[in-house]
Every structure is written in structure tokens, then in C-alpha cells.
Image (cartoon, rainbow, N blue to C red):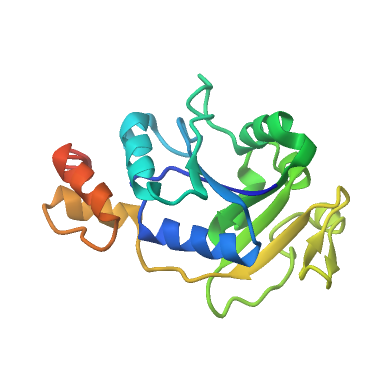
Length: 217
């Protein structure tokens, strides 16, 4: 099995998330992509994010009808803050025998990965797919990770990626980034402006029905 793991706040999930997931699925011929909303993101204040329940419902609505897009509430099951390394650990321990896992994240997030909990161990646990913007020059890991750690990864031309000591690969792949941001969607919803075509229709109706973001800052 080849699964992709796409985490994030998803507040709300939008068409940009879905399009990137679809392209990564196709590029790596994945069997499934799991959307994993953070319950308590370590880089955000609790009051700054919508309740997990609403974010969960919006994800389920957004991926409804797509059998290869699935949802996991694994981070909700933990009482403490949500850390990616613990989520990857959980999934690998549960499915390790026949699972090839691809952790999917954006270029900006990858550049800040050194601030994540146990980031060195995380990068050795599974494959990484770094979604890049058009025109991004693949420069390897220089300037992103400490040189002594980065030196453990060597470019493997057969897979067009950087293979690490555990055999897992860091891939840089260009995808279509739709110029959509969750913060802009929240701003529009707060001001009563349209978010049509920025999110799936089912998500738009859910936002309106539950008056989400109207009282947010």
C-alpha cells in the first residue's frame, strides 16, 4: 500500500488543498490520501482555530464521493498538542507491514521543519513530498536543514529525490498551487462576502448554515 498523509489545520479545507492532494496522488500513484486535521496545533493559540468538530465535518463533506480521499481523527484522540511525529508513529505501527507512507507538506512548512518536535526522527520515519511552486529551483537541503544532518541524504536519480539512511526519500515536486488561503476565506465569511468556488459547495453551505467565522477576529 502507498498512502499519502496530508495534515493541517484545515480551517477550512478548500479547493487548493484538494487539488494539491489530487496531483500528489497521481504523481506517486498512491492508493489513498489521508486528511489529518490537527486537534491542538503547537504553533497556534486554541482560540484562533475553529472547533475540531466543525473542521472534521467540513473535511468529510469535501472528500465525500472520492473513495481514495479519507479522513482520520487520530490527533483528536490525543489530549496533548498535535505533533506530526506522533501521528506518523501511530500510523506506521498500525499498518507498517505493508505500508509505504508519504508525508505531504508545502514548501514553506518544510523550510520551517527544524522547529517541529523530533524533526530529525520524523524525516527518517517515512517518505516526504514537498510541494513546490512553479519556478522553484530544487536546491536540495542546503540552507534548510543543518549540514551534518542534510549530508545523510544523497540524490537518487532513479527516483528523482534525496534518499536518506533509512531508505526513505525526500521528494520536491511542483504542483498547481491555487491562490487560495484559509485566512482569506475566513475573512470573506466574516464580512459576509462570497466564498463560492474557493471551497466545495458542500463546505460553503456548511459554513453558512453554522455561521462559521462570523465572530472570529
